[in-house]
Image (cartoon, rainbow over the protein chains, first blue to last red):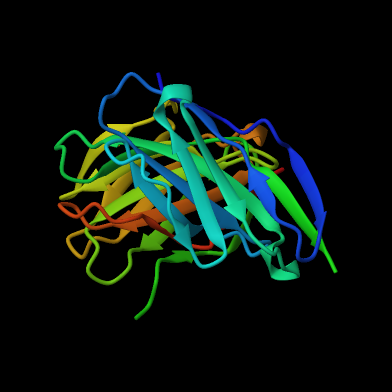
Length: 119
Length: 113
């Protein structure tokens, strides 16, 4: 069974600090996809980043970067120079292939990390 | 381009009643998934619909059922409501055949009293 663990329940930082959100996953699949979503108070889950299991290259996208390490089953997410608008709940999620193997199947989410950025 | 829309936004029901939640996927998307998110928890997968059929199902009882219409919109039905069914119900849409991210609606907040 798939499992996603976000050990950090809450993180509080001051604006402009860098913050890293941890995510550890379990899966028996050899092909899988990892995601980070942001959930502001409005409730909608906003897609941030995606990584597939074949590509361990770490990238930077604006203020966001991620560190995918297959050897330790970790997919950590970093926000550089945090801003008050980054305050939200952040979810790490894991997806297997759908039954047809042509799109994402169900997403398994972690418990979420509440990030509060103070001015 | 309208994103994923869900209705209603809030709903209060009594134990034992039945409820229907609705979802219209993002334009161009044909796959709809439903998730239940209890307060302080991550979303839990209920089921996924494609071509008007349930394709995958999570660990939810048969009281939870769904439907997808020819225009790809979807309904989630919950019978014999329990207090524990109180949650935010999220709909996500995606395009089958393309490995793109799922887009989520703002959810329906269901309160069972």
